[in-house]
Length: 114
Image (cartoon, rainbow, N blue to C red; front, side, top):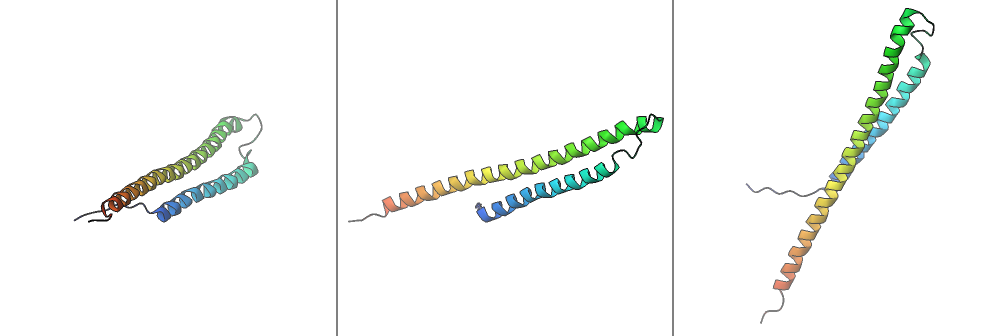
């Protein structure tokens, strides 16, 4: 059974748009998380008690790691979207070049016969 592969520019654009929209949602998550953290940043206490000394650094490290994870997800989705577009452009350009070459060859062979 023969198979074919054609680049679907509209589908690639839709997929790329969806990947980029994920980054918008992640940025929204970061802002909501930041707001929540700001409201409760010192829940563990601020004094010199043992609980504050022990839990404060753990909590702050967790908050920092959460932001780093969300930043990494944003970067990953943007890289994926950009790479998808680059690959699609290469394929579409090659496809166009091949179709153009086929047409030129066909035109040169279908000239006047006599």
